[in-house]
Image (cartoon, rainbow, N blue to C red; front, top):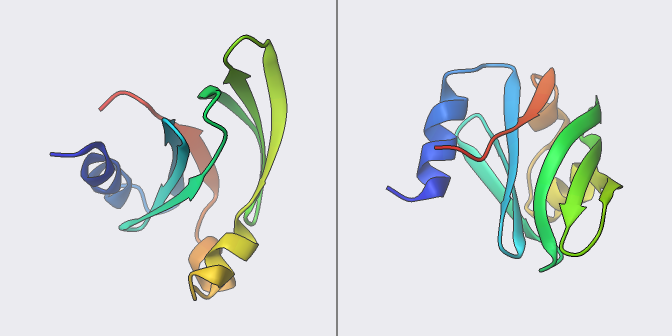
Length: 103
């Protein structure tokens, strides 16, 4: 099984929790059977901590190749809208986002 499928299966058991991770140049945000992937820096090694979750807007700590941990900002609303999702409907049930890399 691919990592994406395993993320979706894991998230499917948690009705109000989403999973954030990355693999090479892509960030993955998985929730409710969907795995939203979007391009990120090729220097991103991993996300280390979710600082804040606010209805699609995230403040996260990230480790980049050759750098100390840095604060990053991710806004999912325009990404979801570009994919023709109803952003409010998709995001409303999410109460928590956690980082997960081990499958």
